[in-house]
Picture 1 (tube, rainbow, N blue to C red):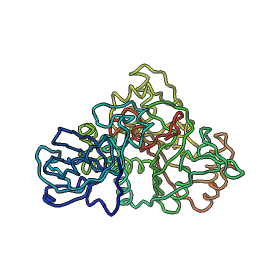
Picture 2: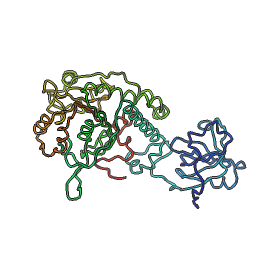
Picture 3: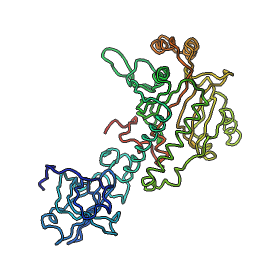
Length: 440
């Protein structure tokens, strides 16, 4: 088969634009063959683009012989079609295109590595091995359409609340939280790391712009092989000046509410396609607020665990808790002993001004109020067994009037997994990175 060139053809519309208002008009569509049927003298092509699909109807005697003969296509062929829009109630969307010309821009092997018809679902690792092809599936189109609305909604909400979008370095010279789960790299002749968090930079910027946020990747060298963990994660980082932890709880729950509201308002079609319209519903706000000690007492007394004060909550305990609390809820005032150096202690220094936002059994967000006094921060660094000299450039900022501030980091991949009812967080990422996956 000789392939066609693009030439002077350009798409006049996307599939979403082809409505009854265009009946009788000539249009040009471009995309991929999602499905096709050859009934002898009658052929149907389902042409898919980023917004959906439209039926191309090729009937012998109605279209030219050249067009009829040329439309011997395969799954996922890349084609362009010039034709007339017509009403046909049995077609998807009640519209069909009668082609006058067809261009075959690229073809595919007779047997694709994964099923693209929707009749069966290929195994996830096989799909990830062929991710660019897999992302064309209608389910993935719906998931990432919802993801796009999530990002738009987050930005709208935060801009409306006087936030400034910032960018922070992804190559750093010091571990943000003093952990060892970092990816070391060579920065010319010096050792550096991929950032595990925007924490210190967003704190500094809150002393400039007062309210800041960033949507960006962070990197965790954690050898978790679960359906909930990744090595490269997308985080919404938020920091606010002149606020307390309670103020952060309020703005976070309003953000969550507004994002879900916008998804339901603007992306109900994709939500229905993945059958989540009755599950991803508007939560009631304010979210329930629990103290860490309350939750430990509940877990120990009701579920028979033996978690002591100062211990983290196990996955199995969260699993039990999630059955009783399937919605959004806060766990506040965690023990200071298990929190990072920058977290503000409560008046009773046994506790911290910190919180987690849970959705059922899964943690979505950690956050809290930060230490803004330089001497107190230096003492906290040393108490955690870290060297304050390693944080010199960060500590210097606290000489110049750092305001009280608080913030959070929200895992967007994990949240999208929940919103879309996905079985594995890797499905919520275009090109996921795990301990076992570095390509594609």
